[in-house]
Length: 177
Image (cartoon, rainbow, N blue to C red; front, side, top):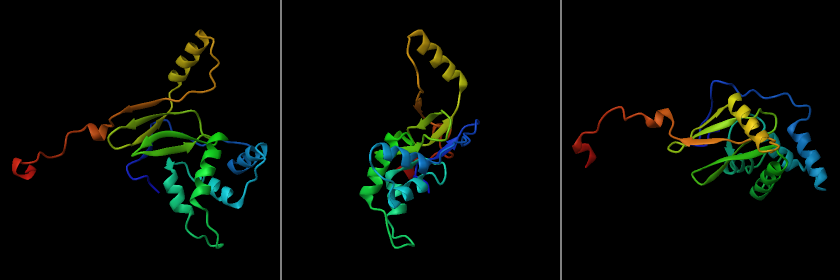
């Protein structure tokens, strides 16, 4: 399912899913246990839906996919989706990437390598990329300042190539009236 204007495109360095020893569901179960909460069937359904494929998503997408009655007769409430997204973010399984059309956009943070984003301000396209030189520079600058870096987050805002191109044809003056 697409986010309308939000496009998930990966730059030349493919962001392959990394091997993890614990599934996202089990990782979330462990996190919830530390907070004296349990992994309900609804929460597990939400985690499985989010990690079914690697795409950027917003809360409305998950709500629309999961609030419909399921084959087993149950459904996930809107409130449960929102609460679970907050808990998944606290658990470090997902993170907010950007805002698009006043919507919070999330991505997987667990099981994927460190990467950064180009974000088109016109069409909201998100392009993921990896660049080791950026990481190297940040590590060097961190060391110079005595800072212990755990990770970084870089979002470059601008206009994508497609949006920067001039229109294919010029409008006649009469068409513009």
